[in-house]
Structure formats: C-alpha cells, structure tokens
Length: 299
Image (cartoon, rainbow, N blue to C red; front, side, top):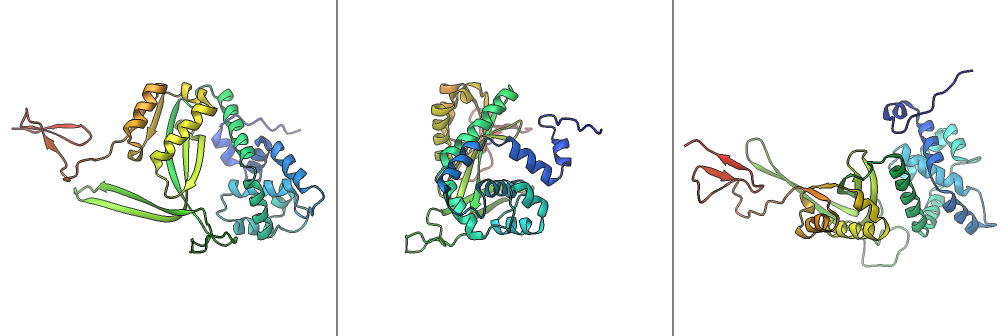
C-alpha cells in the first residue's frame, strides 16, 4: 500500500506543489468555523435549502484559495469544475448571484463570529510557533468597490455602496538622475489595514475601514484593540516596521514607552524647501540629509 507522508507545517514547497483542490481541502479542515455554521443553520431552520449553508461557505473559501476576484468568476469555476462542486458540498446547480448576495448579508450579521475564528487561528499559530509575533509590520491596502458610487439618494438599494468613500495615496521618490517623481492613486472603496508577522508573513490583526481613513489613525485603533483583547501579543513583540505613513511621534512613543517595542519606521521629509542636503554650521565641508545621514566632501 502506498503511504502518503504527513505534510510538515509551513512546508511551503510541499503545499505549492499540491493541486488547488487539495489546498482547498487543507483550508477547509483547518478552519474553526463550526460555531458559525451551526448559527447560520439554526437561523435558516425550515427555510429553503437549495444551497446548503456549509456548501456556500466552502465555496467562498474556494474563491479565496483560487484567488477569484469576484463572485461571477467563482460561479464560472463552479460551473465548469464538477470536482470543486462536490468538494464544496453542492449536489445540484451552481448558486445564483442573488444567493451569494443574501449569504454575504447573513455573514455581515455575524462579524463577531468571524473575528473569533481569526483570533482562534492566531492563537493556534502562537502555540505552534513560539517566535510568532516577535517581529511585526503594519501597512494598508486599497480595496476598490465594484458597486456604484454614492449619489444624493442615501437610501441603500443593493446597487450602490453607501459605506465606501474615496481614498487617495501619493507616492513620491527621486529618480537616478536626481529628478523627483510623484504618483497619485485614487479609488472608491475601502482600506484593509493589517498587522502581520514580518517573518512568517501571516496576519496578527486586521481592520477594514472606508478608504478615506488615515493609516496612522487606524494604527492607533488597532493598537487599542490589541491592548484590550490580546495584550500578550504586544508583550511578546520586539519590533514593528512601517513606512513613512506611520511616522507619528505619538505612535513611536507609545510603542516604546508602553510596550518596549522598537519602532522601525521610515521618516517623512519635512523640509519644505526641497533641498536634498543642508550644511552644518560648525563644519563647512559636512552636509546632512533629512534622514540624518551625514556626507563629508573633500576640501
């Protein structure tokens, strides 16, 4: 009899060699979702069960594993892939778009259970990986909304996104020839804020906000949440890395003074005159950049 060896934890080479269906099976087995499933099934009671709760949930997990950007792409995959339908638990036809819309609305009513699932997985990682959470990083990502933009009519009707807002991110730098460049990104939707383990590249905490919310504002809220719900994560952490969007004196002092976490945060260029360097008053042949790097020129 052929023996299949047990996969080692975080053996990424082994997992990447698996097929999509096998990777989905691993996710479904590891997901602590039983309480959520039972809650949704109790709510449905004797209602129509054309598309079972567990099959709908498994198909959403499949969309994440297969990296489908929309429900319509997921539905096309389900329609062509009989093995996927069977693994998810569908016995009949593929759920309609409206069925997924209703299911997502139900999930939104149980965000606390989904948060509990996330927290449970983080705790499991801390048990398996003693150094998990020692080196953290924080950043945000733009999440565009595919719904229609806001209008003067503020009443939700299922076609417009009344919670999303407009966000803007500006990226600046200097080319090799010394000329500055600037790129402005605008979108309508949301921001996903993440605190992750910088070594394992796995999330420690997340937050979803409208697109206009500043990164530094949400960073303080996320630290507040960890202080209240999982203070052991902050006690275990040693460093937190971030880009210049998080260059905030209050945050830096808070990390070090309250939790002894070393902030590894890039600093903003606060020089308004655009000068690349400035001279020391004491030494004429020494200049420095806004980051504090000194440059000595030959006299």
